[in-house]
Image 1 (cartoon, helix red, strand yellow):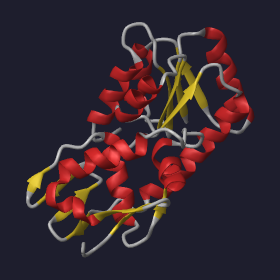
Image 2 (image 1 turned 90 degrees about the vertical axis):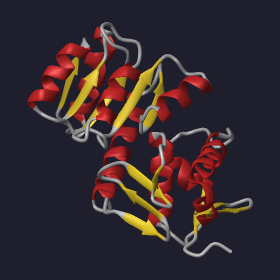
Image 3 (image 1 turned 90 degrees about the horizontal axis):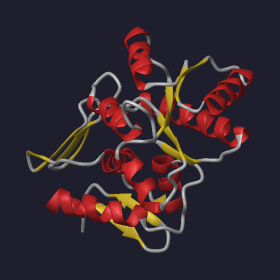
Length: 226
């Protein structure tokens, strides 16, 4: 089941129709209150979320989803007319798995949905706790410890660290990191990835030495920093 929260009737009906013609079960909601009622009844596999809504905006809804252990890893795609770099970074840092600017094509939307469901299905199989030296991460509890002290990370910083640790000693290219963390179609030319690596390193302190830059290629997590 896919839930869509969108107050524009024409967009909501078109998206639901496009999803259903591709074999997905989908339900649309004009208002957040109806969405939360449905969430109490059944959790979906994925949420498509408009950003400018009555009652409660999309970022607030996203924050509530990420704060709950039941929905912390629920795949969410933001659909919005707000498409500046600041808006995209804000949405992704709030916990969105992907960000699609309006107007968008239905074929692209369905492809993004399919890709995110495929990724999230794979991630569910590898959500065990990870540890390397004095650094540990618990995907289930969304917790990170460095030298025994808790580290507060944004949702995207957490995803980035988890992905690097799961692939320790392997170089992950910028393209792979952008696709896995920010979704297909993310702008490869902006500095979002570098900014997140820099803030992640700053928060990890000495444990940041595990994250190495491979110049011109990407990044890797190493067991024993030089």
